[in-house]
Image (cartoon, rainbow, N blue to C red):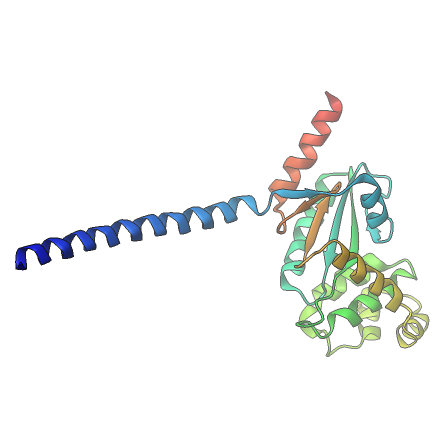
Length: 223
């Protein structure tokens, strides 16, 4: 009887060991898959939908460029700030790429993001969106401490009085609300949310990934 019970215990231990190995393997495979595939484009917008989405943002770079990198961003989002370095390198290395920024402030966790986006629209009204945008990220840790007018002065906004009037009267509210509505209609759930020529990335892409896609498209056009 004792021998029989011992055999049962041994068999059970072996079975549990096999299950543990199998489960561990599944977890590792899932994590590896997520780590390598999430940055791949996983959604293609219809051409008409894409044109509507990119026609309402703030453009940086050559407006007539062949490729469009669309970024839904949040000025209090650390990942968005980090992604700016990738965007700058893409613009520096590819004259055929322009960037369109649209606002997606995550209001539930970033209390100053929506107001920052509205202030950026007031800067855009003076044609200095890119400078104000860059300064907001450079001063991300000071959002809520510096006034939007202070940031305008740092960014080199020339008519700070008009800028302040725009902010005080809610001049950027409608534009930011429209961007938020678009983000929700696209079922975006994170920032930055990034698209290239209508292809949506499941997470922020690396410079290498963007280089590859832009290069492959350029090669296909030459061939």
